[in-house]
Length: 508
Image (tube, rainbow, N blue to C red):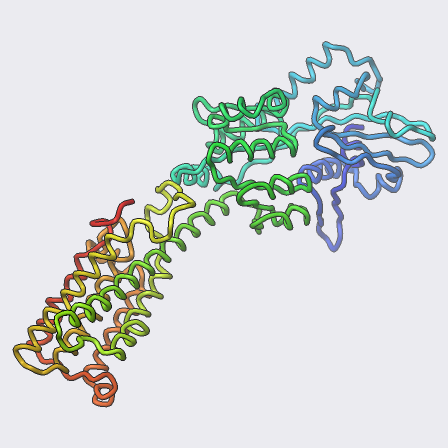
């Protein structure tokens, strides 16, 4: 009778077709259908004998579902949270006989529920009740006959524990908010590393008795909220926001839509999630895997840092060129860089390394840093580096330009020297823009990690050589060939880009 109730009070399906089983529905309900099938109770056959004629659907307040099945005689079948199902039962089926459900039996049942919950089992209670033809729908869930308990394991994926650990390293708090029994939730939370020494577990019932101020006082120590309803989730989100947190909330059911919408980042389950929740969410998790959320955070941090690297290089390069032209004008010197040369630097020789920085692999420490302030500007902390790099690059181009111009008297040669120094300085600097924490030239492995950047720099240098030595390009860019003496000067001056890296100047 227990298995029969579990199969009939159920919206999941298990169909044998084409030599294999096909399933659809909620995993918890599917577990009950499979359990019945193992005992030879196929849902299709049972529903032919006792078709469903009415239903009282599950809701988060009652925490149970009831169906009414039958042809000549009708039976109500209920399943749900054990404590809620026990409230509507006054009898119990023992060895085929219906007996009174007394207080001793209630305590024994609840003790079994706690024992199963401690073993991380999700526990459901099942009950039934014969009905008359003209039954009153409001009286169905009352004076029912208790059948028993079903425990099922919904083990967390193997990668979740490591993902929780990585999230904690990254300064993220992971809270479990569930409708499961308190002990079940606590056991799973300990298994995956969410529960720590001193962490609290709060139930929806306890939450009901708390004011917003009381919730705010304890929420920083809470790891698990159990037996919660949708309205509780909204209170949890609001409390976390009042404490200054950026909140991401995951959900799958229709009832989760309001909390997913209220969160700063709403995440819907792509496989189990309802259409309403997916529409309300900012993101849809295609594989319903918590570890994917942590991977997405890592990817987001990498993209953000790569944008900063891109900005760091291009602003340093542009201010360098402005400085060179401005200072030369003040000193009443010929223009060191012609417009076409500046255009070449910005579009070609700077552009390729800057684009390659956008494909830089993540820094090893990207998930060991705390979350950034959402109000922080994207160029936060870069000003000192950009300014100093621009000044040094400008000096590195101007002094050789002045020296060659005064000693040789050839302005084209002097411009070619300054032009080439500007290009090479920024090529060297592009490597150091890769990491705000580490000196890239400290190891060959770090240097070659971004193969796109390495190829971009090689390509840019080859293009610069073509501009210097190919006659038709010399005419376009007003350059001339460089000799050994000029190359020694160029390489010496541009080598300053090898030693400038952000950590020398930037604040974390």
